[in-house]
Image 1 (cartoon, helix red, strand yellow):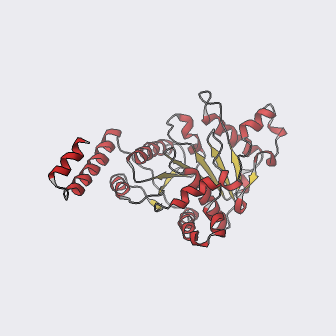
Image 2: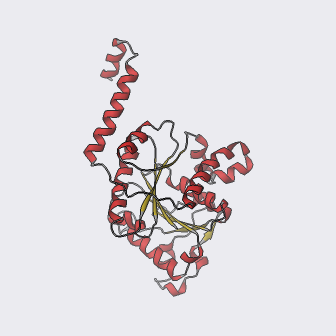
Image 3: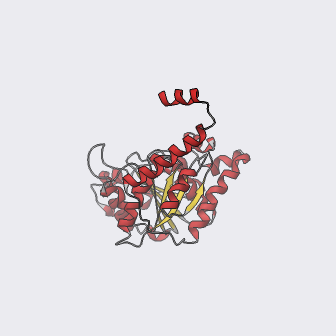
Length: 290
């Protein structure tokens, strides 16, 4: 099974991806995580360092695929999760989608794809070119990481459009949304009421999730030392269990940009109005001025 994890830049895709990969490994699945970002830091919390990239390795061998061995590009991280970083062209030059294609080509040459139960592509955010959607060419499922904010849901809607487009010619489904570090979920619920998409999990606003990235460790590894955090791992294990069952998924029908803007902004303004109804007129006027 191949998964492609998408979402707005900075939403926590890599942190989420690494913890899902570990959770799948804990469920006795052989997992390969492929970082698809020129920053090549997707697998940092699994390996503890920035591993060499596919594109750098290919360049060092003058693109002679026959001179590359699995151990040159595949590194084993925490819980036995294998890791690959595609890398990418220099900033402002080249196409990240081409690099993803070269990565898949090399891994197929090495027969690596046949050795894993789950292959997870962790894809960079906030890009809408064709190269951005390249991992969807190889995936069985897309998973979108979001929060309860307008920008993240707007990005999720654009990603849904990419899934719908790719599903015309590929066996691809959207497995669902993951709400990451979300204190509330009212905007998420408003969105899925209008654009029916499964919700795999909503993780509460837990500071340890953000801190784990800084520490360069997954929540599973941290919880080995601090058992009080083991409850956070249960969220990721729940996601893993749903993935393992090969969910039906959906081919989403995204909202038009203006329709979505109106839907979410009207809902938010109504909520603010209801909340401010308890404020006296002078306070309400001061809020308007601000």
